[in-house]
Length: 125
Image (cartoon, rainbow, N blue to C red; front, side, top):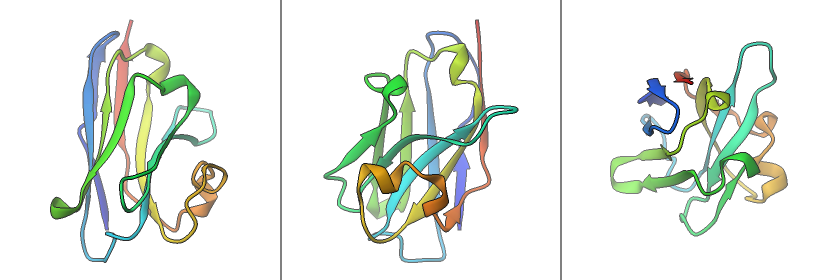
């Protein structure tokens, strides 16, 4: 199971840290991803991290503002979001997959079999 938390309402320019707690499975060797979905839009890739934490990928619009990390001891993946913008408003989901870790694979939400329930992030202008 994946449990996302940490969303909320924040003003533009503010920060939030999302957490994704993993339980009930051996996800230490899984690649993890964060996606988001705004109303009326398709789910889009935000960031991903390899099981070893040696590799990360980001959507261009969040590079330099968001940081993905993982704490294997706590079975938790984080998404630190700084300099938030109104266009970052969405429901954020964490997801997990095993196997190949490439940008092409990790950016496609259809490649992830395991999903958390989502947490709402609202950025006011």
